[in-house]
Image (cartoon, rainbow, N blue to C red; front, side, top):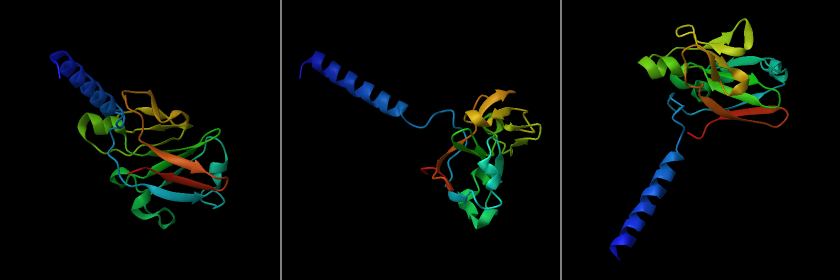
Length: 161
């Protein structure tokens, strides 16, 4: 192998490794992964409200005996939000407080605006219909998102952990 072909070969390997490493999890997700996997029956009186746009429910380990698979990070629970054509599920741990000083703060739905969640410590407002992105306050990171699928009655929330 000539000197020029060695340089080309190592350059290609470096570019491949750089590309593969950039495909890993987004650096915007600062909340560590925990196992999440549960299914909600939208005909259940506890969850029927999710059939209406802009409504939310809290889910945690005590909900319907889901146990730790619905606890979220640090057992803070999960917010399930009904969007226009889809459902969103977010960890209730504030990513700003966790990223900045390692504290575990539970966010809550803003009582004045059900399309927003708010952290009582840092004051960041997170927009629930747009992937939990910060809408106001010092937060730079979106809420940790969990995957959802809906078949007309059953809403599954999970991650690939």
